Amino acid sequence: MSEESDQEKTEQPSEKRLRESREKGEVPRSRDLSGAMVVLAGVAALMNSGEAAFLHTRRIFSMGLGYSREALFSDALPGRALHAAVHEALGLFWPVAVATMLATVAAPLLLGGLNFSAQALQPKFERIDPLTGLGRIFAMRGLVELGKALLKLLFIGAVLGLLLRHWQAELQATGRGAVMEGIAQSIGLLGRAALWFGTMLALIGGIDALYQKFDHAKRLRMTKQEVRDEMKEGEGNPEMKGRIRQVQQQQSRRRMMEELPKADVVVVNPSHFAVALRYDDGRMGAPRVIAKGVDLLAQQIRMVASSHRIPLVEAPPLARALYATTEIGREIPAALYVAVAQVLAYVYQLKQATAHGETPPAAPTPEVDPDLMGPYREP
Image 1 (cartoon, one colour):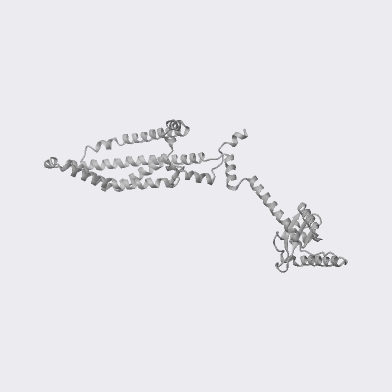
Image 2: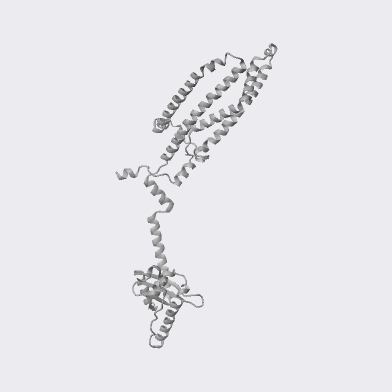
């Protein structure tokens, strides 16, 4: 049961998935909303140019009723009539055409934004496969689109039918009065009908836009396994990263052990800490830590140091402070200069006493600020 629920797409899409979706041209779109904007833009342009539209319409009607008998028998009449009619038609419809083209371009900005995808332009032969097409038609998405189309048809048809019934007297009156009055009334009725039609489309388009946005987000949802796989791809496999860190630590430890024989002294806390120091007054400004470790690694450092006859100096506070404050390959901080100088002086005296068979000097007990021990401060 848990494996089945793990495969359910319950997780929100990641930024990577959203980006890949846009690259494929898959963004939420509403044809109803775009259609509503086009219709409303056209109606607005038509109503804004009502007087000019009336004049152009009157001229078109007048051309068909104002030819003389001689002009009717002229061979040039059809060409002149067509040219004049096209000129008046362009004057009538160019504001509407410009407004609708602008609305067509602006409509995608409301939902999904402008998006150009080269992948969407690539030919996909499965789109012309009849069996695939039938599958899309009878799929749930196709049935939803069919249901929406039927509901739109019924809704718009019912509203327009009621409007025609309400405007029946006005429609009949357009053919009873003067020609100019009939034209003006016809344009007014056409504008109001288009306005109602655009408003209904806008209502449907708004609902459809919300649905398309929800449906798009639903289709992009991810399973928990997909989220984990994407995290592994983006951040790397945790197991592999752990293995890489382990190899890096092993290499660093090996280099540290190779440098250890060059140490001048190893400061230890009898069983837990070991820090190896080296000082070359000709090339170093201060003593440098070349190896350090705790517990098992500290034991290994002590064993290597003993095999190379490197002095071991027990100074627990100093060992803890060096381990806490100084990374391998770095010089010690100025706050530890005096304490380390005491240890190095002791080592020098110890070597001199051993070489001449003298009594070894007493081991120092350098004082160290407890704050320098950090988390390794003794309770």
